[in-house]
Each structure stands twice: as structure tokens, then as C-alpha cells.
Amino acid sequence: MKPVPPSQPEIGILPVREASIVEVGKAEGGIACNKHSAAGSVSQRACVFCGSRVVLYPIADALHLVHGPIGCAAYTWDIRGALSSGPQIHRNSFSTDLQELDVIYGGEKKLYHALVELIEMYKPNAAFVYSTCIVGVIGDDVNAVCKRVAAEKGIPVLPVNSEGFKGTKKDGYRAACEAVYKLVGTGSTDDIPPHSINILGDFNLAGETWIIKEYYKRIGVNVVSCITGDARVEDIRHAHGAHLNLVQCSGSMAHLAKMMERDYQIPIKRVSYFGIEDMSAALYETAKFFSDDPTIMERAQELVREEVATIYPQLRAYREKLQGKKAAIYVGGAFKAFSLVRALKMLGMTTAVVGSQTGGPEDYKQLQEMCDPGTIIVDDTNPLELAKFCLEKDVDLLIGGVKERPIAYKMGIGFCDHNHERKEPLAGFIGMANFAREVYSSVASPVWQFAPRRAAKLKAAAAQLNGGKA
Image 1 (cartoon, one colour):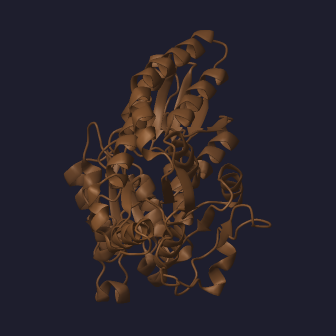
Image 2 (tube, rainbow, N blue to C red):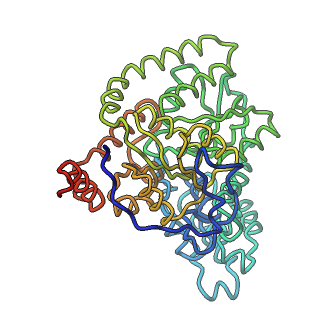
Image 3 (cartoon, one colour):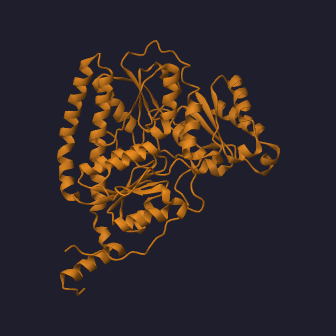
């Protein structure tokens, strides 16, 4: 007989949140999503301003100025951790630092002088100005200030309409796409070769954009621009010359891809670069699109064979040790969740809980189809819900971001960072090997035997083996 896990305290769910939680195999209909966070739930979701900032931040040769109180800039400083192969202007956090008198009399003059001073000092190739909640309240004409400075300084100065109260983090993605789209189409496409792509939705966390670009280079496909990982303003200007847009983070970049399809007739393919299956599929889908050159597919197949042969022995060894372990996943975009479910399955693990901050109805439908019966699926969850399901499902690992880390450790559960702050690449084939090693190191750490929850389980198991005596 299997040992009976110790009873856990009952954690309730707010009634208004019930429609945003489903159990695979029992749910009828879809899941409630794409709406404002429930009041009182202490949701993990960020605001519109934060959503726009994380998307545009990796444009390394642009100036990023937050028009608002200093707290907004402080909260989002270095938020992506995106690496640059050249300029480092984006690593600075600039703010107009609006004070009480600015709220009363307006902050337009302060914004103008800040922009002029920063442009003269740093010589950026473009500037983004982010509107925060207070700017929307007092009514500063940010567009007019940006237009004036752009005319005086001769560079694009782009307003980002990202007042935090206007919606959710996903609305911030849209605001970011509309701002950066003003650069697209302003450069020449004369020197762009026929087999060219744009990579949309990778942000070069831990250098992952460089890994992916190298794969495409090896199969003979040119990358015009990466929006926005290690991005350059000049590359974005030429982006309309690409013949295919590969969209990884559909939540953040779908709107930009659709605008480019509408205005420049650039087809869209949705891909992921996490895990062996998805990375291979991304290369094969690109090769199929450029079928006029069969050597691209041949090179793609050879690349996949070489890379998988290198890492598969490591994955097989980890699978033997992780077989049967359970994981919970809570990430920003649903595309990550798809890849993580498949990657965990390759490692012999099951997904007991999975959710995202910005998933849509089609995303959750796909998750229900790919997950096992009994899996809990949540949209825009909160710490109490996450703790409840992790305890009830008795998971061995929680995969999330910086806000989920304390939840895992307090419950005595292993943690894997799959969000903005990580320093080791998890994309590509080498990323899968890194991911497997991190999962194993977290789950198999001997420290968990000292966690109260694990200690209680071990005691219960020992008692059962000894005829009820502890």
C-alpha cells in the first residue's frame, strides 16, 4: 500500500474565481480568462505599464524614459534581464520623477527637458516614453512633447500609451506593439535576401536569442530582426523586408505580427524554442515555408540529429531519476506552458497544475487537450490558490517566476525559474539539457527531507511500514 499523505489545511477559493479554474476530464465548456483580476485575490498579474515595459526594454540602443513617479521606474528597472551584444542604454532606468507640484501644474515641461538632456547625453537611436497612471489622470499631452522633441533632435521619439489602470498586462503588450510598429517600414529592404525571417517574442534572456539565431544561420535562413531580444532600432526599421514572422510569445507579439501581415503581407507562424519537440518543429516549419530551397530542410534535419544526439544521453539519465514526479507550472504566456508540459513529459514527469497570466480561450483549450485527466488549469491565479493546488496535488516541483519562488520554498517544494530573472539559457537544444539538469537538481535535493511537509510524509510512511508505530 502507498503511504497516505498527511492531511493539509483546507484553503478556500473566492467564488468569483471559480470560473477561471478547471480540472481536465471534469470541466464542461471553457475557462474564464481575458478579464480584469478579481478584487481581493492579490493576483500575480502586472499592470499595463509593466506589460509594455517588459516588451520594449530589450531594445538596447533606444532610450527608455518612464513619465511618472519614481516607483514605476524602480519597479521595472532591469526587469527583463535581457542581454545586449553592444549598447547598454536599456540597462539604465530613467524617470521624470513626478512630484506633487507636477501633478498640480502638469509634467510636460519636465518631460521635455528630461528628453532633451538624456538624448544629448546618451545619443540613442530612438526614445520610448512610457505613460503611467498619474499621467493619464492629470492629462499630460505626451504625444505632443514627443513630436516636438523628435523634430528638434532628429530621432524617433515614440509615446507608449501604457497608463496602468487601462487594463491588464496583455493590454500593455498591445501598447508596446503599437509603439514599436511606428519604426517598422521606415528603412530600406534592398539588401535583404529571399530566405529571411523576423523572430518575434524572444527577449534574449540569458542569451537565448543568440542561440536561436545561430540555428537559423546554420540552416541557411537570414534573421532580419529580433523583436525585441538584443534588438537595434535600425534592424526594426527593416523588419518589413522579411518573408516570414516567427512568433514565439503570442501574448506579447501577436498584435505586431498581425499588423505586419495586414500592411506588408508577411505570413505568421507560431513557434516555440523550448524543448526538443518544439525547437525541432520551429526549424522544420521554417524550412517547409522556404521549400523552394530543399537544402534548407536537409540542413535543418542534420542540425536536429546532431543536437539531439549530443544531449539525449543526459536526458535519458535524468528521466530514470525523475520518473513519476509531479510538477506545477505557472508562467506569464501560455506558449511557455505548452512547451513545459511536453518537456516535463520527456523527463518522465507529469503536470498536475498548470496556468498562465495572459492565456486566451484557445490556449486553455489546447492545454486541456494535452494534459492528463485530473490536471488543474488556472488563469491569473493568486498565491493562495497556487499553494492550495500544489499541496492537494502533492507536487515535487513548481516552475514559475520570481513571485512564485517564495511560495514554493515555504511549502517545501523544489523550484525552477522559467521567467525574466534566470541567468542560464533554457531555449534551444542546449537549453533543454540545462532545464533537465536544473529540474533534477531541484527535485532531488536532499534538503527537502527537512521541510515540515516532507518530514510529515516520511514519518507517516515509516509508521505504516512499522505496523502503525512511528
